[in-house]
Structure formats: structure tokens, C-alpha cells
Amino acid sequence: MARSQFKFLYLLLLFATVLAFEAHAEQKVTKGDWDIHYIAFPSSFLDADVANSYGLQRSRYMAVINISVLDNTKDDKAQNVYVTGTAKNQLGQTKRLEFKKVKEEQAIYYLSQLKHIDREVYTIQVRVQRGDREETIKFTKKFYVE
Image 1 (cartoon, rainbow, N blue to C red):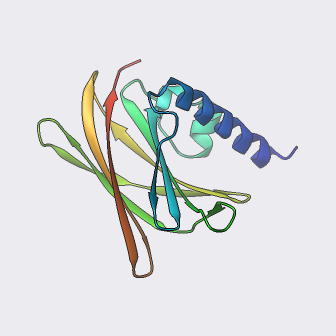
Image 2: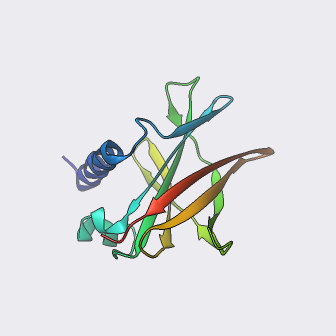
């Protein structure tokens, strides 16, 4: 098995494990023919080699936000889009999220990091664009220092 396939399978297993701890069975929003999947989890869940390969910082105070967009009319084909976002805490402080595109085989996902303190709640708003089309999703997440 090629190294990139192994890393991708490792990430899928990691994300599945993280999802098992989430209160919701599936975290996605359907907007027309797009299924926008999202997850936010502690960066400390990542293996050091995986984090390094994606340029992610591992820290008890850092989260990873993962967004993927699939076309639900074409066998869930990954979509090449532009992703931006913000994270707003309960004090009204807003942080801009910078997403990095990751492409492996047929998968495309967008990763960003968010620094937080223990038990900090953020409302995360993500904008997905391709051409003239723009969709926005919003979700709330409470982060813990592990």
C-alpha cells in the first residue's frame, strides 16, 4: 500500500473514531446537490507524523476543523471549492479561519486550526464557494483542553 493511501486510511480511521465521540451520528448539512461535512476535534488526536505532513500544530490548546464537500448526485464525488470561515466565542471575539486544501486520491478536504482555552464555546461559520455558487453553514462546538 502506498504511503499516501496509508495516511489517507489512517485519517479516515481517526476521523471515524472522533465521530464516535460526538453527540451527533453524522455532521453534515445538505445544500442542494452538496453535502457539506464538518468536524472539529483536538489536534492532539493526530499522530505527530500525520500532523507534520499536513503542516498542522499539535497542542492541547489547538483544534482542527475539517470540511469536505461532496456532490450527492454523483456518487458523493469530492468537490473542488474555496472555503473560508470565522469562529466566534461567547465574548464576541471573532477569529478568521484559514483553510488549507488537502487532496489525496479521490478525496478533497479543507483543514483549518483554531486556538482555544478549556471549555471555550465557538460558533463556527463556514462559507463554501465555487464560481457564482456560495453556501454557508454554521455550527457550535465546545472545546476542551485534553
